[in-house]
Image (tube, rainbow, N blue to C red; front, side, top):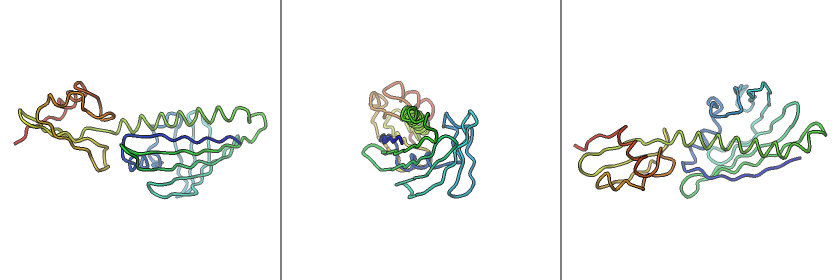
Length: 196
């Protein structure tokens, strides 16, 4: 049996991490999957791009806290547990996975395979969460301006007020579409409107 435990931080609300991970209807962000077949509330099948199918049975679903399942295919069986937590500056996800190879000759390969799969999954998840972080509103003119950014469909949003556009320089948040003067300026062009 191979086991892995990885904890990662995301600069977005835990609600967004939970929604992205558990939404089986929207899995296009997963680079390894062709599709997910939902059988019922607790059973689904992931089909890889190479045509391999893995069956999953949900064993725990505690919204915004814990999602767990068993998994099985012709080569392996195992478990996965995701622990979701609010953390300073965003959310923390801990992934705990165990895999048992069904064939003796596969056992030496499982630890490396598990490590690669978890890295790919978390890299894909990080990209998806960054892509969903958007600048929501910019109001500007010759006077003060207000920036709001966050994640589509999730609150609370962060808002900062500036006395002039030059104050934005270097202060635009990471993961909000850009950093520093250039990132802020790009977004100002997209959504600027004057205060009344």
